Length: 407
Ligand code: ATP
Ligand code: MG
Image 1 (cartoon, rainbow, N blue to C red):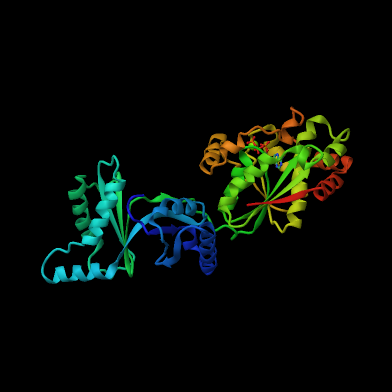
Image 2: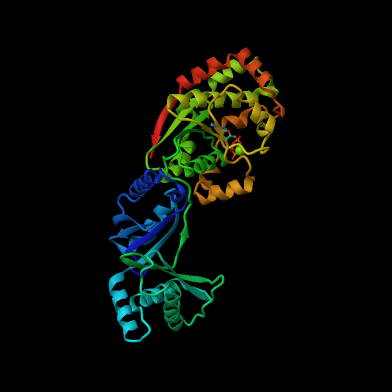
């Protein structure tokens, strides 16, 4: 960025609606921002009149700092801004008014023109949008819009347009400073990481489950991950892709992420001969969910998360989803349940995981019987569970799991 921008202004949305807990959420948000900005040239983070102002020591770092902040859940908009001292501007405006002149607001106009020049690009019209968080300022918003708008028009030649302009120059009047900024980038909103409790995410090597994890992280959850692999040992299974997917989610969370790797052999040994082929897929998924629930309890996770999307594949019919967990007491969160594959892929690209998700990987689900039952009933699954001693398989698998911390 060529324009000096020693401040980044960020807004938060949902936290503003929190009542008495608001300070707890704010503290968490600011701590998460500090962690995300570790090592960046940041002087301080201040909470000023419903905005967060991040002062930089190196103006050149504005883009990088903004990119890191975009991954901090709870923030709504992020924008590099030019900060100006309010008092001299206000004194000069008051003197102009006393002398019967229209105030020039020169520092604001200069900053606005420079930003319009940098960000104008192929814009065909513009508008100045002023907000006075502190309304005691000598001039009202319409006056500031008019004065600064005229200056931007003279300097860029662009006409003003109030409705749907290509370029918006924002002027924000605070108690001690005035901020001028153009490039507002939408962040992801949500709640600060770690503010909603822990969840155990069933992570496969596909596209869906990392997106499901990300969506629950955006709601403030702290995720543990569990992945089921075929093969006798972790080394033999080659779970590099799963580690890479987990690593892809670490920029969105302030602490290292835990990945539990679980062998599926205990299921396979017991299901053989006891579970008919057509029930193997749903029974296997039941095994995964029950084992995940066991690990969840051991790791203080209060819910399971999976990447199921209704009807996407045979194992995800409304019957099968309902039948696999009659005896699992933890809530099972399925944030993708109503999404189309194309929407899920769009999220996967947006959060930067798509390229990793499409790397080749032989997931243990992909080697199960090709024609699963579509309408499994809970009592049938409970019968097969007893026949194969599913509880023993679950215990054995959980006992054989290993944990890696990533990030
Ligand atoms: P894809 O993008 O290929 O659909 P997926 O992850 O959704 O990948 P599915 O076969 O649709 O794969 O599985 C549905 C859900 O079951 C997954 O989203 C995941 O939560 C869970 N799951 C599947 N396989 C595994 C596995 N090997 N380990 C852990 N969870 C798994
Ligand atoms: Mg899927």
